[in-house]
Length: 411
Picture (cartoon, one colour):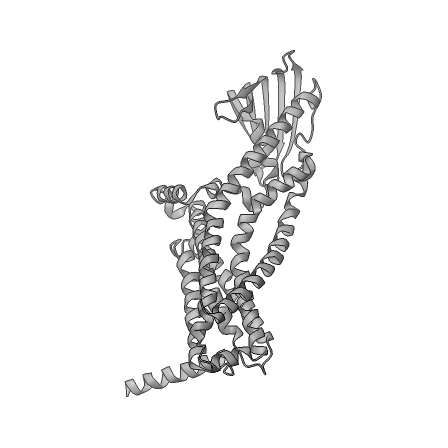
């Protein structure tokens, strides 16, 4: 690595770290707002906060690494252009390829880190977070059974916080506190009529289930009825002899934190995830199952975002090389447009797949091919024209040249 390569490599790396810290902190604070209720209810706020930090950092790094590298590459080269340092280097024989070589090498390193964060660290963090939530949910159930459950008393708002309101009533509690008579359980959900239901049973028993390796409290109801409201105002009533409810799962679902708890497949490592995707494609309802398509597009997003680290540094360098007499605001505006277009293309590909307009692979190829084409375009722009030529003028010139060539060919 030459002196020039070391110079530009070190400056972009140091500035990338600063921007990465700022963007990651801002994103973390926004994510933290969704955890407020959970921190209050666990009564173990510091440890819960630490676990949440470990949980969200891989997801945040996956998003902020490419953006930090893009902005750092452009800012460093803009400063060099403003000080006419870039003109001096180019006059001494440094080509555009030399300007892009060290940032591209840095992009390769960051792409590997971002991919490891998205495909390895993020699934691991999701698994640990799920275990952590399970332990806290179990503690909440144990505290409920020990302190709040009484005979002939409604325990309303059974699990405070969360989206569902749950009430429990028992007519009689046996001495062992694991057998009950006259049980009423009401669940009022806010996600739709299917989430609300009432269960009544002649008797019930609390069972400590250890079959899963991490023990659970199962509420087993006997000889009862399940009442579910219908949209027409009537009720659907189902009789049952035996009905089991996982109290730990019920408590845990009260504290789902946005997208992080939305899908169990997101906690799979790549090999297992790919195997599950293959099984989904073999299902008969594959062509009409939006959930399966979303699983595909999420996995492709985990690949696309890290790979953008390969293209963003070159784009940033090419945008940063400009005439020192021009304002740098045009370069920064171009960066914002590129970021917007990149994530807009990701979302467009996902929507086209979810609406069954195109195959799910469109969410993989559309943003990658588009950002690659943009990199080739801005690199060609800088190779053919001096920094004083704006990008739009370059596009217009290329369009006129191509049109003239086509007209001559037709003649």
